[in-house]
Image 1: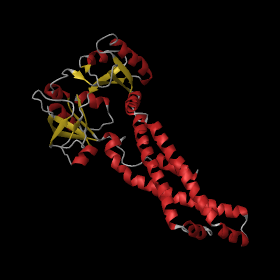
Image 2: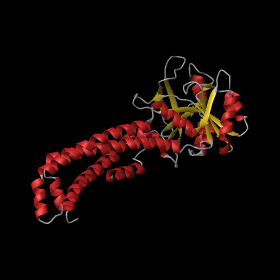
Image 3: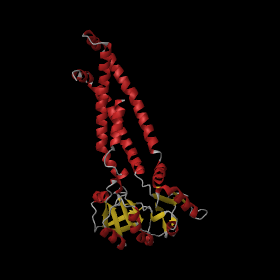
Image 4: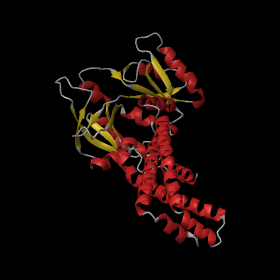
Length: 356
């Protein structure tokens, strides 16, 4: 620490150059924190997938619906404990920017197959008994200030009514929590019967089936049995584990991990040359000062160590500043990926990368 004042004074010898170098490194680590945070958020969702659940979709595409009548046939297969279904509703609240993750479901079936979604029994009963009833996550309720008893209008971007309108009204009858994964508290569930009766097309169909298996080790066999059941039918299926389904869903967006890595590689590769060039110029300008240090008894190794420590100090300050800014800005992405803060492994990775 006794050399810290010397390092600090040398670092600010050219204030403008130091500030611009500091800002460039800060921006690089800000990008690192934000992009890796998003990547980690998607990966966490995949890793938390339940091993007891399978997802059955149309073999053509996720957007193709399946007949509601398939549910009874799936439920009768050996190894199947229970079956639920959901569909993509695609609405927004008041403004297109206020997108709501909303799904029509059968209350008893859906909440039985997702025990991690905690909903008081009286609220579940109200959900079952209320035709226009809806249950929302605690995070969604907090975001819009919704509470039980409120009547909420949503505008669907997909589903129209027979009169040509796309506005649907719902009565909030329950608020669920998910103690194991707060990311799941942003969904909006409502009664499938209300949805099926009110839509102008696609009646008697569902988006996908969720299958709970009795024995997770038999998941592959159950998945094969489901697909075999509907092979060569007008509605062939594709059944996979919940983890595989989520991975496939993310791949429709793109290979997030590869995209993020390519961007970060380009940023840090450019930063390496910019920083290296700046420090070389700084050393050339200070040759007389370094000669004075050698005159005072500093060895070549000591002088080199001081120069390297000066560069390291600048990078440390900029990296901490960049990661700190990323931590402050990251909550703004809550509505996109559900995370309220950058995952700790990303911060640790940033610190390790900085030290390298």
